[in-house]
Image 1 (cartoon, rainbow, N blue to C red):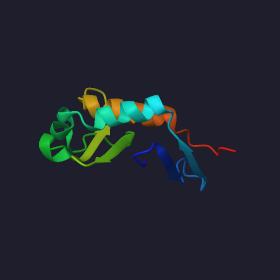
Image 2 (image 1 turned 30 degrees about the vertical axis):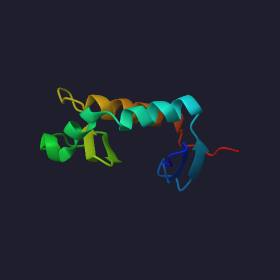
Image 3 (image 1 turned 180 degrees about the vertical axis):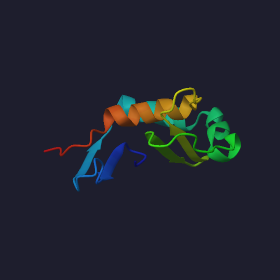
Length: 100
């Protein structure tokens, strides 16, 4: 993800397809606000002393200037709030399909 909202995903869906696009201006602005949120530093793996707790769960990793933030889709696992909002925004805005 670039500062201007341009993004590229290599082999996003595991099918060898490269997708690219640009976030809408309001999405880019929202992303910048979330990335500047001071709570993000407390959500890093290091700050939370994160350890994977599930086997065969969907695992999401977000690398930010604050550090790596990992979460798993496991019952009962507490999810990082700000990182979760960032992942949701990116997932909704960057489909893993070819754009013409």
